[in-house]
Length: 321
Image (tube, rainbow, N blue to C red; front, side, top):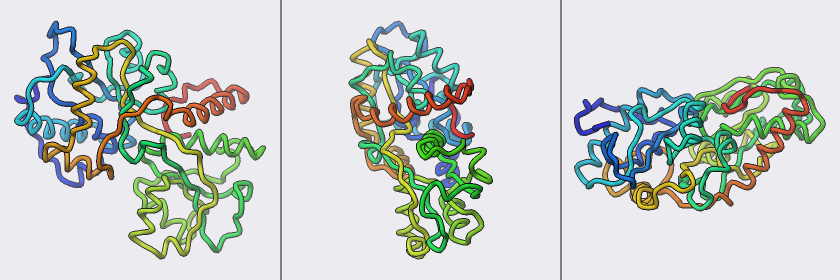
């Protein structure tokens, strides 16, 4: 895709804030034209499952605006982005397996399916994910809930966000560890909230019994509204997990890979990059090995075993129940 000649679509702050995973698309500097025979080219695509409910057209528009600015500040690098940028999960996994895509932004659920062909030395993460993140289940301080077992029949709400892609796996394995039924049978109702206020405030006003969200989102909510911290409390906490990664296929071009890593690590070197990083509550991007995924893989292995024991044959590569 020749982004220099693509029309620029204005992106408002509201639109940009909706792009839950735009940082991955935004981190890609312009590369060789499609069809270039240069063996150093690394082809990049992002799973649409990483959008976390954001509008894919908005995400592509934001990418176009970013690439216009990057083009003015950078020379050619050895990376090529698929024209559609965001690719449906099954299609992306097939392209990675075939070797047509060598760099990919994926959820941890997708990572499990291509872990065997993913280079263990190179994962790029937002800085706040560098050592994993935690989920919390919060309840009203005046409630009688003291353990997960007390939530039988409760109304719960889950933050609909890319960071919460592993929430179903955590909740289901937590229930199983307490010898409790599956979530759909244990809870009275499970709903989704598009932002932190729509998740925390219903618990505050006792319209729902409990909420699941990222710890860093919960701590930010408390900073903005200290009364939430006084009126709500954490019932249980997940292990540290990594929900989204930017990874490389084994044996891809070393030159192309390094150029792409440098581009992501220096995303703040241009104005658009600084703005995008700020929007996603990060300051930089960190290079890690796949060792950072160990706890996440353990959680998902337990989840897969649990589904197998229940005879659940679904391809559970997407968030939600």
